[in-house]
Length: 365
Ligand code: SF4
Image (cartoon, rainbow, N blue to C red; front, side, top):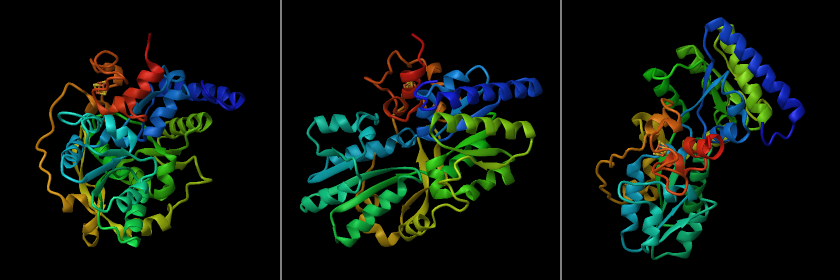
């Protein structure tokens, strides 16, 4: 185990996980399998060495949790097309710059002279708009439930300051619809989910009850430190062994039963459910949030007409990686044509991508 702040706790915990996993194996004749659906978990499991230490006893599968990775190629193409217009400033998170669109990346457009800016705090996009009243400032809004509240803060700020040249291209994603998609598709055999601690602060423990009631599968809300990951996996195996599906909150100090109601009210004020296209999956009904019609003035999809057509097909197998069907090193391009310096797909670009995590921490040689 690496970067373990508390080896005297983590080592025995890892041994306990291996022991209970072997018990599962004796009972069911296979390794227990769990999916994490959060890019931070994907990176933490690899960086801490938890995934490597448990690889012979526990099947830890990465799912669609990295916001950059699941962003549909058409949204990248749309932003590149928007950047071509006169008097435009495109703002985005850093990881989005190198995600390949159909023909090029946002970074390519920036190098070609388009005004595309990386912001460390998205609320800065409102300031950029204020400082450039003669230009249209468009922010590419990606993210799950942890990031979406920040996007609504931007709208609130633009509204308060009466800024008319600012808009967001919303392509946000929600956890529940994609978990339902995975379970309905039945492509991967799972014994449970490791549920993200930070998303769960917003959603709350009870929001996952459908997993138990409708799918009879467990979920364990888990933090990101080595000991938290190990105890979350231990609890997941314990539940799988018991045969009783349940939601377990391994992060009770910060995750409540019902989530953060202030954030929920804030989201309800500005946003409404919409169908969203996921890279490698396609459109999942009601799997995203878009601005309510009364905020059309801040909705880039309403303010600008962009026709980008169908996404270009590539040999990248991110779609299968995102759905947990293959491990990154099963992609023929992994570590050859595709590596962090020359990423072919978003899973290698993103700091939370499965392929990047695998390349950085789990590559052999
Ligand atoms: Fe796509 Fe590269 Fe990952 Fe292959 S290794 S799935 S090409 S990002």
